[in-house]
Image (cartoon, rainbow, N blue to C red; front, side, top):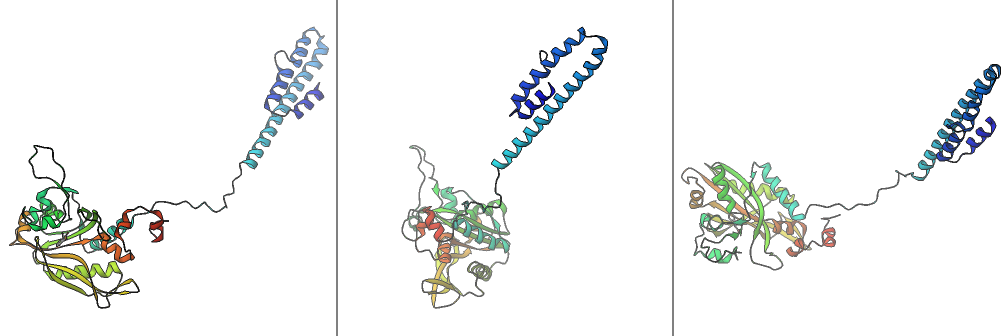
Amino acid sequence: LKAKYLGLIADAGDESAIEDLRVQALGKKGEIALLMRGLGAMSPEERQSVGPALNALKDEINSAIAARKASLGDAALAERLRSEWLDVTLPARDRRSGTIHPISQVSDEVTAIFADMGFAVAEGPQVESDWYNFDALNIPGHHPARAEMDTFYMHRLAGDNRAPSVLRTHTSPVQIRSMEAHGAPLRIICPGRVYRADYDQTHTPMFHQVEGLAIDRNISMANLKWVLEEFVKSYFEVDSVDLRFRASHFPFTEPSAEVDIRCSWEGGTLKVGEGDDWLEILGSGMIHPKVLKAGGIDPDQYQGFAFGMGIDRIAMLKYGIPDLRAFFDSDLRWLRHYGFAS
Ligand code: PHE
């Protein structure tokens, strides 16, 4: 009996076969239970020898079962280890991840340069009131600048006679909002989206500007010049620059100047700081007293400079991109070509 069961257990191929054998041998109606029941009919001497022998057999079968189960488990584990093996030394598959849009990169970079000079970042709404976008900036209703700016007006329902809101045409309304929020002295940089109805190689109806503003008791054009020189050197990564302030006109600055940087175009690539060409990069000036007043600041106590620069424009210049519209086409091949995406 012992040889029979030990043999069968050793041959059992899986857990359920072992369980069947256990029932067959040790179960309530199993072979050994039957023999145990036979003990009652035996003489005391017989019982004394057969009883312990049966118990020993029971133990042996139990431990054979346990041993077989363990070895089957080991084999199953070994099989899993073999079939589920993973070669962690293989090179990883090339996974393309998202990247920051070049305009956002340039915007962040410009902001960081001015932040280093102590300018705080300000923001304003893109849907702006007539007042902040124009009137407060000394651009009254009849002013030609309103027409020049190709303004997008928000629709109002019939019977609603309030002045229409506009999509801000520049970041300058944030000048007023910042003055109102913080008062003087003030040093603010404001990057953001602006809108004008215009579309060609160098204009898109949505584009980006960064506004700069410094108000204090002794601010002059000299401060403006220094700040812009530091910016241009840092942004274009050159040691020296030559700026040209060209007299201009903006209703919200007096005097006003457009600022050019000396440059050359060598084989189509821009070189900043050398050469005989001039490149316009921004509009600027001393904040008009009326604008300070509109922002709640006393022009007898404080002066300030302001400038506004096209982020898209300086991005095109830095990366040698001929068509602004490509920035907003979301064409991965284009983005990869310029190294803006992986
Ligand atoms: N807001 C002007 C524009 O959009 C730029 C500017 C800003 C000029 C601040 C002077 C001072 O063209």
